[in-house]
Length: 126
Image (cartoon, rainbow, N blue to C red; front, side):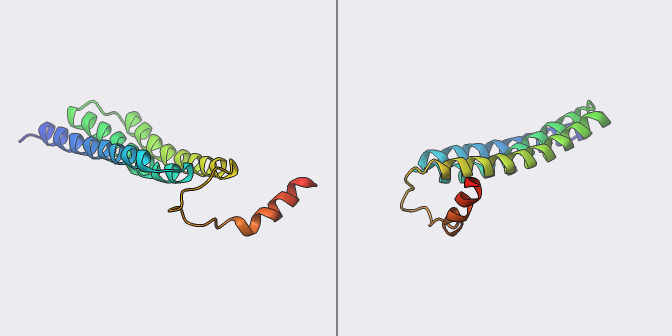
């Protein structure tokens, strides 16, 4: 087995594993009954699935001999940006879902921010 074949196999496995994270996340989101749980279920796809797909694409290009240094830097930056943006976006989506005051599923754990709600409201009233 040549280096190109091995690289293509590794790249395919990485991309398949990343896609599996997205599929499991989609099933989990369909089974979730409230918005906060759906946002929480989105984390595996954005934290593991997307980086695996990006790394798989970079490994494929490397095995084919098409990966340049600039492409490697772009892939590394894309993985880093995906992790940062997904964590910030999850935080914002969770806050928006919480502030919408939709009824939570009985299986969702209690509200850990409840003691701070009154303090937060008084800060905005000034």
